[in-house]
Image: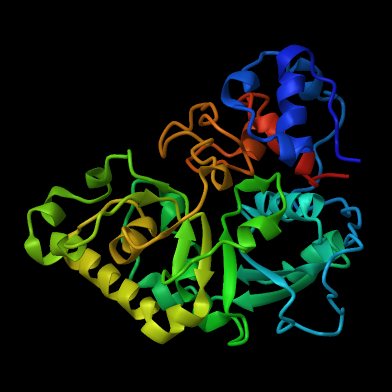
Length: 358
């Protein structure tokens, strides 16, 4: 039985439609989510001390349905029936990563068939994950920050300069060769649909799949120096580039390895160091290499921007349309806003997946 919260009025109806019934997700949720009836959920006992920073409750165990393909516990990472998901783990976003994993398991029809690949640059996180999810299929991979430290340039927000943000560029090298496809997810999101649906995305001849947003002003992702120099802007010749968010991607690692896209991305990062062709962290190199060559995925799989912009982190509404994944990209993260008692309305959709505290 999925979680039900007693909100009044229209908010309750919208929540049930979005989270409880994926089959009903054609309902346009953006209008229905707006509500001020959040007091009951956000009322914290003032006398209770805050939990330890790294204290997480043990997640419930979720079992595969009877019609799921067999996923033998001892079969290892190369089992062809597995769904592979990659997520980064660090102390700053650990609470978000754990909520993301919890949401995936809760809504998956075959949770025991999901294998998680955790990318870390810090120690002591594997034991915490295993204690929170005792039966989780997982492997932890160390990503050395020194690999990219000299390639990273300053960004509009310091959080975008962290080396672990660039670990997704190296998934094809870090993961086992038998892992031919992976879903990469950011740490500031929750999945409210069966992850297997995203896994089945047809990539065709493309290396990555992601929701595209062709109405966005693509020119703003690069500096005037980039657009005025044919050596750089010529990269898009023959393409119709559209913005896509790299926080949700289905990646063909086999094709990535064959072409050598990691080296291509590194070359653009080297150019950035000398010519300052963009301002936004790890996103622009992906746009340079893949924009206009992306297998389209429904927008329902990345309702992004819920964290506001990269400076103020203001509240946002959902985009019109059905929802399978809620993504708090931007500077406002739901766990910080909930703890500060100044949440946005949509932050309460993240809260039921939060395992932080006793």
